[in-house]
Image (tube, rainbow, N blue to C red; front, side, top):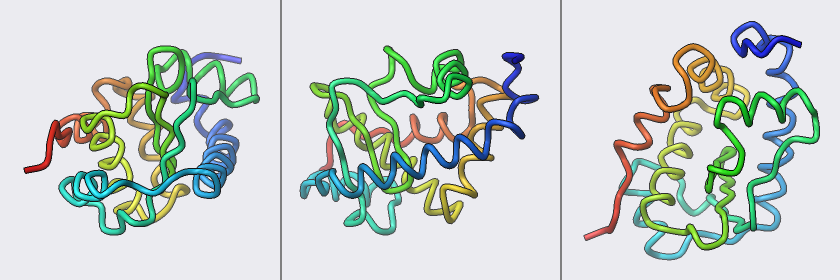
Length: 154
């Protein structure tokens, strides 16, 4: 299978959406709600329903068991050893020891982006297309999340 994500998107997207929905469900069932300061961070970056967010702190971010999804996620920088947080709808995985305001606000901005899109099914094609065409770092949704990182709430 080719590593050209743009060409692979039509094949991988349904599998990616299924996996993301499974992960979101797991986080929403097992995760913890935001603290008061987390709720304030979420509101500060535009989240409409911060009380719906759940965080699950894990030793490392999970990878899809599907070998093609796993390879693409690591190659593009979406998941892997360098990543310490990821958001799936209202569910957030954070790596243990990295629960900073900056990371939480970044991930909350992704929650806002999911809210604007309306669903995982609507958000993921746009997000993955950006990653495929301009790369993870330059993807407009990642640029936006970095621009909304907050160190502290006044």
